[in-house]
Length: 480
Image (cartoon, rainbow, N blue to C red; front, top):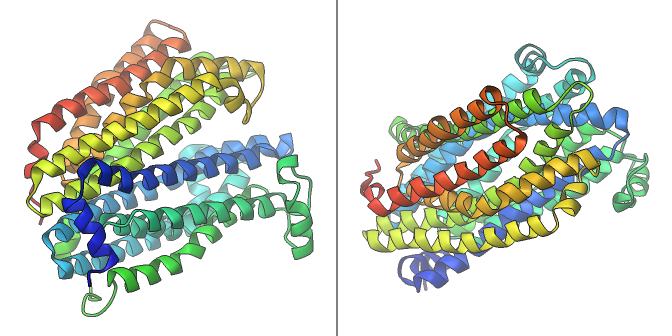
């Protein structure tokens, strides 16, 4: 009798394609969207602390998230490479190759976790003060937060990596359920650890009595860090158990010493994905910097606050796109492994189509309820004015952003990560950055023009990925 995972792969390789892409991708997209929602509420917890605490805490949170993201970016590159190799091997029916690659990739992520932890534990203050230039209370609380976050970086590395392995092998509901469980636990723990027995907003008024009964102190920003680590760690053990029992991974004889050949294969495919994310983050940081330099003063930081809020909201669109993109990666990889490039290519189109529908719905909701959504985080009129204007100028382009993300993920599923790096670099460095600098610093245009450039950038991503996807050269990528 075929196993559940064999049945899932059979559907990916031979089932009705549109229906199977929808069945596989919808849970991933919804799960990733919910993960973002939980993270947004986490930021809401910090913002509702006392003003003298919330200000420095939010400043430290933004800095630490960017610093900690470096390790996550490198880890994610390894994860993308592992998923591409595993889905191809799965399509070929090479179970021993699947087991070897999965184990060796875990060794690589483990080594990266150790390096990141050492840097975080012993170098957090140097990163905050000497690299970023943080001062005062921001530097003080940020150092403690960063030390915990990077010291426990293995939790997010392995959570994303192991759930991506499951997805690459044909399982979509299990990894999503693990992510949702982790984020739900994070939300509950954060309310307890951030507020402790002290005052809390009405939405979380249930937390102080429980914290008081359990003797949990009020840790504020540091509580958010510990809540995140504990919540992620809680689901790692069941994930490993599922992978051993259901997928047959991490068993002898696949548990071996490091294999340099497999390491090279994973790294060769993974590093372009990591650099590609750095390019995207760089574009966002430059936009933030331009807003801060041109549209804020020492007395009025509302424009920076507004862009910070809308960029966080935009992560909802990004993560939903990554959910459908993950489905496209799996279908492309497994069907290429089964020597069916036409089905592989068509699956990317279907995933992009389904994602476009969700992006259009999200953009409509944001446009209709912009004031309420932004006001959930900051209801000051000056912040609402800038934030609502951004959503109404950029929201329509989320469909284009999603097309670029999904088709790019499909190309990565074939292992052609260098191609996606070139395409992202082309759009960001040939269009977004130069036009943004000229419009803001050269011509002194208003922030509305910068919003329009962001929207046009998303349109450009869609165009270049559609053109390259239609060519189909990525389908001929050879994997070691």
